[in-house]
Image 1 (tube, rainbow, N blue to C red):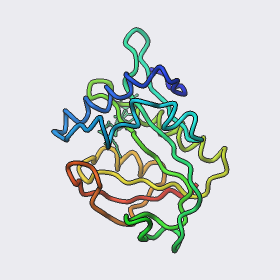
Image 2 (cartoon, helix red, strand yellow; image 1 turned 90 degrees about the vertical axis):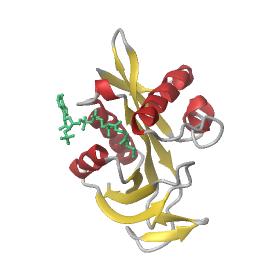
Image 3 (cartoon, rainbow, N blue to C red; image 1 turned 60 degrees about the horizontal axis):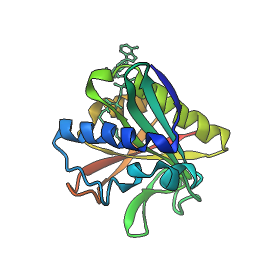
Image 4 (cartoon, helix red, strand yellow; image 1 turned 45 degrees about the vertical axis):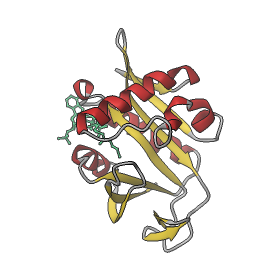
Length: 173
Ligand SMILES: CC(C)(COP(=O)(O)OP(=O)(O)OC[C@H]1O[C@@H](n2cnc3c(N)ncnc32)[C@H](O)[C@@H]1OP(=O)(O)O)[C@@H](O)C(=O)NCCC(=O)NCCS
């Protein structure tokens, strides 16, 4: 297994990774709206100042995904939940982890490697605080985030089709 920056040609494979994990958890796959970004990695991430990585197994192809979104610091008390643009965000964050998914039978190392890519790139770009919103049922992810120093600071209901309950976590970079 290795990780690498995504290319526009990875869009289909990246979307398929996330779709398989949604199927595993019985969540609603929403290609036209909530998951539309995955079908256009160039427009959504690579050409938009963000980052996207894939994990790949030689001979098998893409088995994992992760993204870094960059944005101006969110107003509000650093590290605390705050209302911003009609949703709950975390004050003082200036980047976020997005779309961390590994297909079920390829887990055990890929998630950590992808998270490392995202955190390292955020630090290289001089970001100060990373925001993570994560479905409360994704318990393996929360252990992983903890190993990167993430601390839970809030909760909200996601705007996805399932209205998923989420924990909000922050990493001081
Ligand atoms: C969260 C997720 C991406 C983690 O992927 P992963 O490849 O399993 O992640 P890790 O690299 O941390 O490995 C997971 C476990 O294997 C262990 N591990 C790490 N490297 C390993 C290796 N080389 N061999 C065996 N085990 C290993 C880790 O210690 C970890 O143990 P834990 O679950 O008891 O904490 C994956 O579980 C997933 O896609 N979950 C569903 C979607 C999700 O939760 N996404 C987060 C959205 S916010």
